[in-house]
Structures are given as C-alpha cells and as structure tokens.
Image (tube, one colour):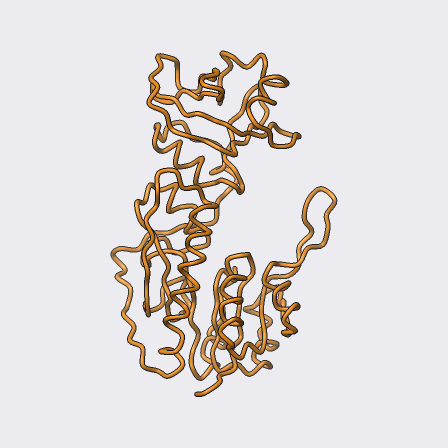
Length: 310
C-alpha cells in the first residue's frame, strides 16, 4: 500500500514525539485520538493533551472519546489502514483492533515482556533495572501482550531520573518506529511472541508509592526518589507535612545516625539511610514552591538539623 491512511492514538508528550515522527516522515496521518481535555492546577484550567496541540497545529482531525471501548465509531469513520499507538492510556477494543487492513502497532517504552503497563519508565528505575528500551509490537486485547516486531535497548545510568530517561527513550522510540514502519506497511516484517514466563508489570504510580519507603534500603530509596523526578516526586513527612524531593545524589559519607535523620552536609540537606547519606539539593515543602537548599536553609529549614523524616 503506497500511502496508507494512518490514525495515531496517544496522549502525553511521549506520544507527541511519535506523532511528530510520523508527520516529519510525511506519513498520511488522517486522524489523532487522545484522552479528553483535563482541568489542571489549582485554577482548574482546561488543558489540551500535548498530542492534541500537535494535531491541531497540523490541521489533523482530533477524536477524544471518554471510553474508547464504548465509543470507537469516530475512529472507524476515519477509515484507517493502520493504527499506530503510543501512551494512549486506554485498552483498545477488539472491533477497532481488527478494523485496519495493516493492523495496529504500539510503541511501548520497555523491553517487553518486561514492564507491561502504564508506568514502565518510572518502574525501570524504581525497580532497579540496569537497562530498559523501546518495543514496537503488534497490538492485542491484553495489555502490552502482542507479538514483538522490533526492539532497541537503552542503559539506565546511576544518575538518571524519570525525566532524563524519558527524554532518551523518546529519541530511541522515534528512530525505532522510523526503521520499522515500512516493513509493517509492506508486510515484510516478522514478529515473535512474548515469553509469558518473563513478564513483569509496571502499573501506574499510586499515591502510596510516592511516599518514601525506608524499608527499601539505601539503593532502593535512591531509586524510588529518582524514579519519580520530575513527576509526581517522592516525598517524606516532617512534622506531619509533605516534603517533595526534586534533586538527589548519592554520597560515600557514612553516618551513625538513625535512618530518616536529617542534617546539613556540603551545602545539601542530608538524609540518613542505613548508615549512609543521600544528599538533597532541591525540595518542595507542602503548599510552597520548589526551592534550592540555600533558600530553604535560610528560611523554613533553619531549624531542621536533627529532625526525622517519616
């Protein structure tokens, strides 16, 4: 098929990168499907998903069903020959999966079958993985369970955060789709089933998982914190109030202080975990803006020496 009609389904920034790739490659994108607009922030401002903004700028029709499983006719009306998805956020029903002549493919940010689910980048760090990557796969009714078409790996560095890894994976995902899509269109690709014995899951981050779990140990706490930067950010409690961490570093410093003890060290807020020290250089007190340690120490944090994080 020379110029197949492509419908793209995605919602956040990562999905926007994939949509841009399709558009910059000159693909015939006839429609975009994304989650509904949301009210954001304290002022509850109605905000378009990143993918919608890109589509509107390109003059592409946008469809935003509340529940795609019940309301997919608008997608079928676009008469897609191929559906490409990335970070859409809903399970696509069988009727829609079976409609396009060339099928449906998904760009997923893990090396499947590892880390199926909605938060694979965060969990790759939080769960202590040394490597992750991107998979282009055939879609199935089961979440992220389709046959693998292509993959590309990406190492996870010790200083990576969710944000830095996210940005590197976006580049890899664009390249992988670019190198894969023609084989999908001409039918020359070969896919392989996932090994169900190797499956792990990366569920969306819960509110409970944002609170630092000191039973994870030194490396586990560090991974939890950096795996949630810049959103939603891990936190601990001091005097019953949340303290979000925006920047953290490991340290070779040893301490006899109890896990959870807070003190200042080398112009950082130091957090004792298992007789070692994590160094916090940017934080956010509940109800306040994020701030550096100098500003914090000279203000709200001037009496924090010896306090305990819970």
